[in-house]
Image 1: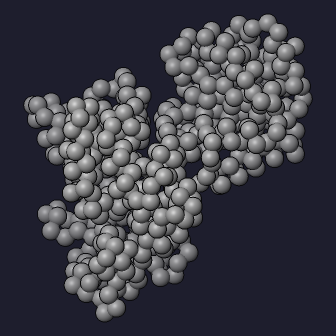
Image 2: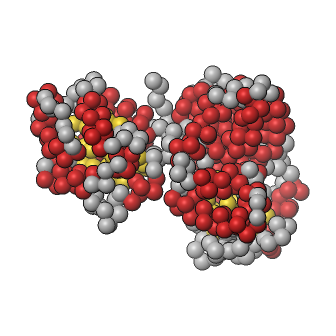
Image 3: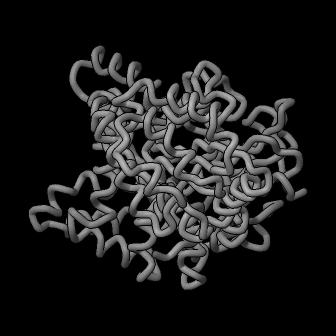
Length: 478
């Protein structure tokens, strides 16, 4: 399989392995990331390219502990470079996690090795003693051996809790987060065959999920890829979102309903009241449902972000709710409403909506990506002053709204920006003039520099202090 866009993550893993080799002592990593983000592919690349003995085992969803242990024993024998003393150590099948982990040091034979336990949360769901058993085995023997042990999981909340101070593995496992590919990773996958603006379009549609990016690689534009994918309700673009929700919300139907309500609002920028309205039913009960679901969606599942105007309290009533994942935002807009249409042979309805709507939709959907790029650039680009935080700003009436607002800790706002995601029409003087009005509206922005962000650039006399195009934004992610 092809592998791209993971140089930093792979370097981190190899540095951990180098430390194991140099010290002769074990190291443990807890690797988390969303489903489909490419964690398993990354770890497979590590074990397949190091030439070291390894065990790569994947837990089985809802399987009892004996089945989990039997699966690990079976996975041991699929390694291209098996553990050196595998056969004598596991001549008889292990009977429990305790038994398996007690024999693992014998199988390692004192040689440097990698042990990966993928979907670790699935194993702990059916055996709440596993963390403690692993801690005991680690402290007694495994930590003293040259082994890199990697625990991998898509349950973000559970994997975060794994290393908290009241858990058995506290102080033992280092944390590592594997996100979907960044726009720069998407660009690498296309090897320069598409321009930077098209890279961002493809990023909005795929979310940087490697499987979706791989399916898009034969195309040079988002239009050809999406139109082809929308022909089939079982295509990767159409079905991945549904599978993600089925996996992550199997036992949380109400939270899923609230997520779908947020997703049905354009680009997921919902207010509390709009989410209640989309949820339907009695207003009081729907309001209660939204209130109860938000903590799980924001903190547990981490699929929703709460945005507030820069400088406002996080509890401000001006809060908006945004689906974090670019792909899910796209899926809720163009795939989810038309799955039934695709299935009955009316893919033209989905395609028609995409072709009519995408050019304007992406202008808003790109804004969180742009803000992240500006935040990255601000760390080293003097043109952005001393900006420490980048967000947006709007007032209660939504009469005044500014796409990019850079602030510092003392409350001052040295940067105001507008995003005009157009490929043919540069930012105009009138648009920069409207942006300049923010100096009198946004608190602390009286002396703010004006930033114009547009793939087509800016007119010479527009009056922006800083102009960024797609190429500069893409460079921020490298």
